[in-house]
Length: 209
Image (spheres, rainbow, N blue to C red):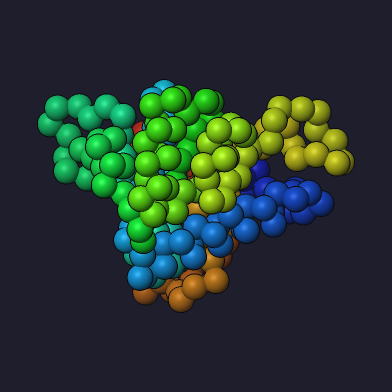
């Protein structure tokens, strides 16, 4: 994805609901993982692992001075020899409870197995958030959800046709670190930060992840 196009995305979306929608959802996420919370768990579907969102939230945690935004990536399949921070399996969701936040990212149907685990986490007191393609069952379980816009014509009344779930994740992660104390290295302009996010969209997972 072109970094300049992503950096200008908010201006392109100024006449739509998406700037406000992504900021609202980011505010919910930031509030849910407040310092008194129990941490942020991030899980995708069996076919989609949200590497880049994990990395971007980790960056936002460092830049914004909000360490609670740094997530634990929960994986459907953990390969042998994976480092500890990449070796957290689905069993972690069984231990999720009050004070913790579970963010589910799934461009397609999450599957019955994952939905059952999410249901258990919510029943145990965890806050459930969803970024997805609009799955009804997942939205029913979530305390708050944001669905990427469906593919459609690019006209004045709709979001651009290429505003997909990956782009929505970038906008949410960038907004999650806003309106907070500046990072120790000083203030970064929003466009500079979005450009860094865009650069990482097609890159391999960084060493942290």
